[in-house]
Image 1 (cartoon, helix red, strand yellow):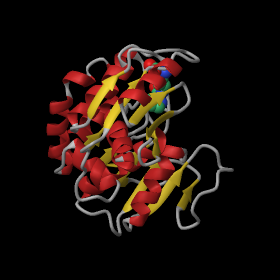
Image 2 (image 1 turned 135 degrees about the vertical axis):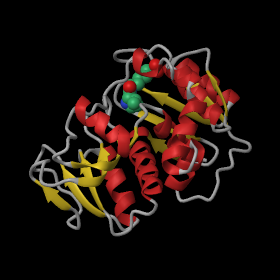
Image 3 (image 1 turned 120 degrees about the vertical axis):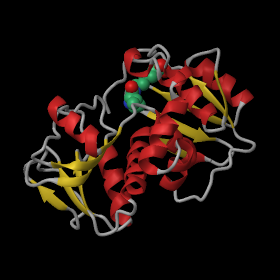
Image 4 (image 1 turned 180 degrees about the vertical axis):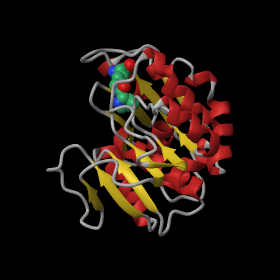
Length: 260
Ligand code: 2YC
């Protein structure tokens, strides 16, 4: 997934209640309930879990606000979480002493571990599950419905597998025609084959969705960062369609649901 910027995340911590209201409006469920649905649990119990979020300075370094935002998202869904004073191994050591779960990310991998149970989760897979869960809920039941997956990376494939298991008819588009997918999926060699009403936009490219591949009443679940629709089409979708997009929230909540 694309690397987030300070700008992408700066307002998340103070908009979580607003996000819940938007998610309830589209899916009927709040962030925590969507993540529970993603892991097929009736409800999530974080009793006894304490999460250390550890800033990691490797590679391109710290993203201002990233660890604090992860912590705010976790607190919003009822998790006892804090950001370690130390970074890197010092922070990991602090986390081992003070907590029983940890979240940390370098430039390529964002993981969560529950070292009491040994469960682990990785952000791409969790994000795909979480956005697929939101699409399923927003659709009122995806069984027998055609879904377009844009981008067959870790995020897109996790979403496709979840929706396929729920009975969706999966069409998948990826620019790399060499990539192999579940033979049950319809492989698209171009993205404007036909209009879909249920779309997972999981590509790092922007502007791939337009009226040639999405109906005006489409429900678009967009874990892809940066997400952007063609402006004219975005206005049409905003009237009659539904768009689920957030750069970090659904991924973090689903990571926590997986390790709980
Ligand atoms: O502040 C820090 O600890 C940094 N090391 C965090 C770097 C995160 C890089 N990854 C991303 O921006 C995206 C996120 C959506 C999650 C996965 N990739």
